[in-house]
Image (tube, rainbow, N blue to C red; front, side):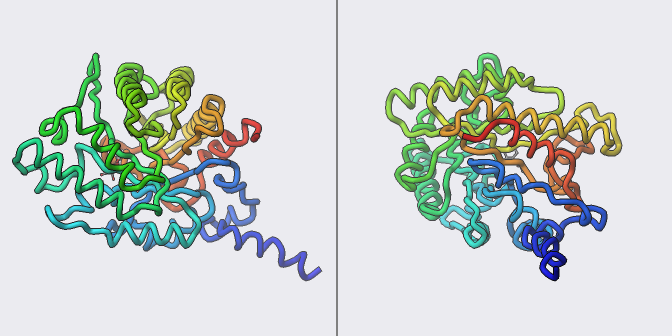
Length: 364
Ligand code: XIL
């Protein structure tokens, strides 16, 4: 009798759900944790120190992460600008703290990102030198960073956003491309594999699951085919998927994932968020928008499961925990609510949509 009285309380507290729930939600049954519904990593991008909303300093965020997610990505903290404050200096303190927290809590960590044209240290953008100088720089960065985290991370975005949105899509004019030429891509993947032979190596990009997708994805797959033919190491493609409730269509997503699957490469949805205010029509998140967003999360997750076979599922990561943390309002200069939890850490209908998507296809 006594145990019957205590049991709901014990279950509730051991899931951690109650920590983040409002009094109204405490009375309801907690939905199953996302990570418990999948055989592949369900992840979230999180701010680390010294960002003010760092996961490491927020018990509210930690409770949500502990319950629903099995994989973590530093939203910014492993980008070159933050790991390389000065030419000869590598700074790992904050990124190491994330990796340690993840280990303590049984989460895996995905590295983002070794090579990109944005969030570079200022000293690098001002640097002058010949191709050899920049090759040396790139090699040293990858060797040191991937080497530092070797054995601790499950995967890396080795190169991020290397191709343009033009038709036809071509090499993006980056500090690496300008100074080294197209060979920087191959160099990056070879160095990453050498530095951490067990981490899976991804190429990551935006707008490749539809819209300008077919064009840019086609160019990326040319690179992939060339890599596969010449045994340059690459394990998968990351589809960022900063999408909205209208675009891309599910058929476009299916087609795009399918092209990667046919090559035997892994597919990650690496930065999922679903905007609802793309037309800037809404000052607040309405119940109708919440319902639309819930359906969209369910559809995207179901499409992933239907198109990507279990052994090629690299996982699905949402790009931020709460709507208060999302990069979309700042980047798109509008109000928006693209994530699974609201700014007060309450689960949104979108979370149920994600869970429904995961449950929509029979597990093997
Ligand atoms: C974004 C972060 O979310 C922001 O906080 C930051 O100001 C800019 O970068 N594609 C990527 C991510 O690969 O690294 C970007 O993250 C979002 C777009």
